[in-house]
Structure formats: C-alpha cells, structure tokens
Length: 207
Image 1 (cartoon, rainbow, N blue to C red):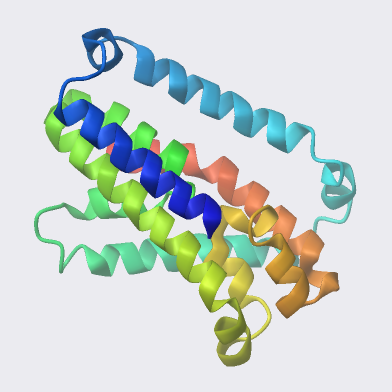
Image 2 (cartoon, rainbow, N blue to C red):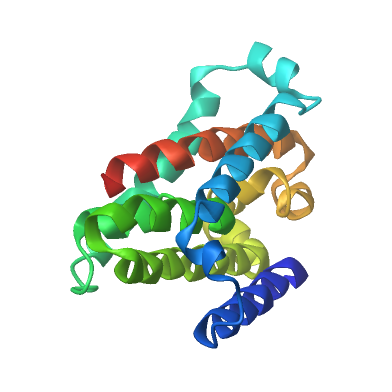
C-alpha cells in the first residue's frame, strides 16, 4: 500500500512539473523515455535471472502450474475486451493493452506511451499511458486490500491471480498468509511468467 501511494505521489509530481514546463525540453522530446524503457526491461531480465528459486521452479514445471498464469492472462484480457464496450473513447486493442500490464504500472505505462506515440501522437499516447498507470496501480491496491476476501469467496488461488506480477514480490507475504506456504513457489512462477508476457502482449496490442 505504501509503495502504491508513493507511486501516485511521484506521478502527480511529474504531472505538475510537466504542466508548468519545469523540466528540460530534452527530457520530453529526446530519447529519455526510450532509455528508461530499456532500463526497465533490463531490470526485468536481471530480476528473473537472479531469482534463487528459478532453477528449482523450472525443474518442477508442469502443465498444471502453467494453468494459473495462463488463466490470469486469459481472464484479464477477456475483462479488458468487455470493458472496451463501455470505454468508447478507446478501442478494443487499446483497452487490452492497458489490461496487459498485469499490475506492472511502471513498465506498461512507459511502453504503451512510447509505442502508441508514432500512430496516435504524443498527447493521446500519454493519456493511454496514464490510464494504464492508474489501472495497474488500482489493481495492485485492490489485490492488497482484498486478499482475505478473495481467498474466502473464490479460493486460495484467487489472491495470486488478482495480484498479477506482484504475486512474486509485494503480494508474496499475503499469499503466504492467506493461500498457504505450499502455494508460494506457484505465486513466484506466476509472477515471472506474467512479467515476461507484459512487453510481448503490450507490443502486440499497441501495434
């Protein structure tokens, strides 16, 4: 919760700085955004590669374990598809790109803004990137606050699925508490698979 509030504060500060033109123009017009994007993707690779349990999880990998992240991806994209009928300002592919963030608000918002800028312009792309940022922050906060309810109503796998990529980091203590210690490896694998799918799915829907 604290991290999510911090992200919102930083985002608000950035909006204020941009609105009052208190940042160098090179930061907006140059390659700064793309460099940040490359750094985020590099961090994803480093995080996955340095995971101490990665080798054990790969050895224990079986089809049943893959059903959880695959179901999370399918369910999120299906919800995003239906949401596009109510968000008439955005197309179906745009809504599904936003949903493809899976609570990875930092990477998804930057990636969507960068890819969409070429086709719809910087302003519209920034609006969609902002929507992605807010949608994925809200998803994280709902998963943090709703973990006990999800477990009680939908079962032990529900907090893992609702958390998106955060099932392997921010939500892991709550997964341990409400879903059980035996589902922690599954939660880590779930987060890793979703994290790898974010740039692929967003690139697909944005293009």
